Image 1 (cartoon, each protein chain N blue to C red):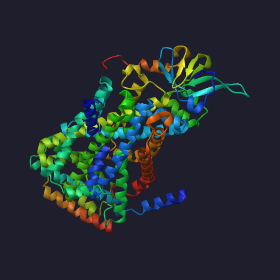
Image 2 (image 1 turned 30 degrees about the vertical axis):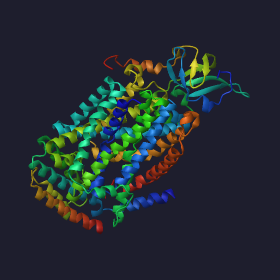
Image 3 (image 1 turned 90 degrees about the vertical axis):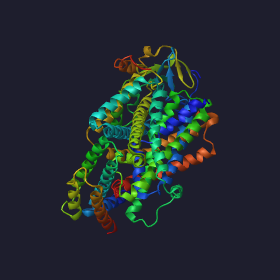
Image 4 (image 1 turned 90 degrees about the horizontal axis):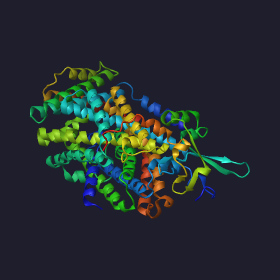
Length: 411
Length: 115
Length: 114
């Protein structure tokens, strides 16, 4: 295990953890319920670690991409239903990220929102075209480390650390009305969905094949999943905690992503604001690239096309045309003028509905000794995998009724 | 495993990647064609979304056609060298009409600027 | 069983017409007023860039207009409060904006406990 490679891998995971949905829901969760939803972030983080590690292991040992194996396991029809569902989920998520990144550029430069959406999609397409896979990940992930300003801001505002620590204990706040309880439940489901977005697993697994992972990379996979995701999750929890300390008492429930940047300006002034906006820009742009590529991976793998950015674009032409078309489709959605916050809500909702379909085949594959040989799920991975499958299935069933009953968490 | 061996279709053949005689990737096994009535023998492998027709509802196949087309290549059993983790062919994929989709798509992609 | 659940959901959703349905827009307007106050306060303290302030003003105003236009009872006390808020200048004093937020919060709390 090359220590430099490993460090870069972890840092990339940290910088790339937060996307526009996590940003929005972390800020809203903190302002609405204080520190009471921290444990849900922690719960979701363990879940994404479990499934990321599994997907990386499947890529390294079976050396086949998740969607190809998924089709084999589920059969053609159910595999196609899964592909379709995740395509829709990933496309809406990608559109939310594109809208989010255009918003950030508008806050930074004042340039028109729609123009920035067009420019950013062109820039992201160019970056995927020009850069090899490893550097696509690294550029967005490492620059996303500007997000650390939110962690620094939390230290600077001297929050009640005992209450933050208490937030890690599973709880439901006392004295909530029925409506508030339903809203709390909706936020819990939304946070789980945002932390465990399906695209993360598709991208991580396909990325493992892109980087040529083999059985020798098991430790790299495990350390990157655990450390990278945990530290990244700390950023989301910092945003939630800042919000609990600064926004809740001020009656602010962030209605637009830009409000989150105030968390860094309050302690650090103008430079804090700029660093926060830059961090948000790279983290959300990275998420846009990941969701687009994850979608293209799924389509190409399912239909047996050449795929991957470890090849030159002309060596995998259908894959190349697919990710470009997906970016343009996401851009079209943004150009309809639909509100970014609404896109975030729908991305969250679609994703949680798709999660059980995504994770079940992965769980079965990772436990299958025929594919995984000596690296099949051990008792811990098996137990955690099934536990989380039960949790996300329950969340998927509850998501739509909760969305309707709470008007998307708005009460 | 050789083409004459007994084989488990679902677990050991369907969805396998196909490599031609030049080791070029040519798609995956999408379906199989049988010969005979009382004792079935594998006649050919079918490659491409066209092989899904009849295996799914019409609206689903329409969606597949929209995204991936409906072309289908046919690999007779006498062109198969071995079947293992991959299916290895005895001839180039282009002789069997495989990878036509990639070739057609490739005309739209400039060979420039990528690292 | 499936049909019964759907009817129940529709009934529950339908129970929130009128002020109940407007509750989400009142919350939205309350939060926007508070965010606006925070932005103006931070701007006055020199902690923000001018570009960010202008941009935030534009987006917050858009959100407020949407909330205002979505109200089912625009002539209600909360409707008038939101409309007054819309008329405030961009650089309104944070205290004034917070007073709007506070009034909307009181209405919000009353509706939630009703």
